[in-house]
Image 1: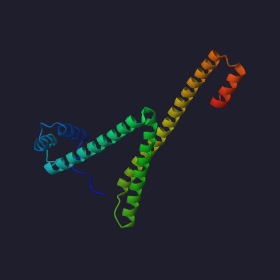
Image 2 (image 1 turned 180 degrees about the vertical axis):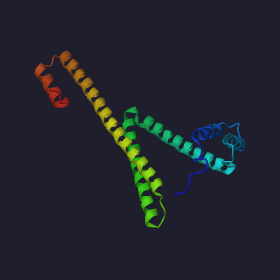
Image 3 (image 1 turned 90 degrees about the vertical axis):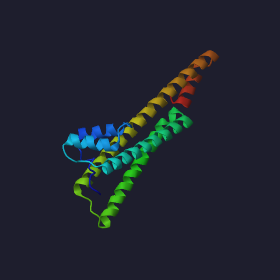
Length: 185
């Protein structure tokens, strides 16, 4: 585990300003360095650290865009009803990433690498929060799916009842259909 970059060490308001400036194409990285250092009152960032941070931001933005495009393509291909399936896939993927991270940390530790306790505790905290949020989202997805199915069953049962009445089907036959097909008593 490496040290925090000089950008990550900045005060939150300076880092926010730096991010805002990096998103403005009319401002050069050299100007950003000068502005941030002037506001800090000392040389706290360099052009190379700003450039590395910009590359990280661009990489993250590209991955986010790519994930959004995949999700949109999936929904377009399979419909909005499958959004729940996409959420489940994403949750499972994140779980796998967490497992990989834990495995890598164990490998690092087993091979004599140093894992600082404060970094490890921060990772464990963030991972546990992420898993908790995933579990909550799974619960919400299951509830939503159940509500959608119940509503669809209700609509179908109402339609069966309407058609049965229009066709003169006896009340006993209609009740049997509702009970056998829709499990409605």
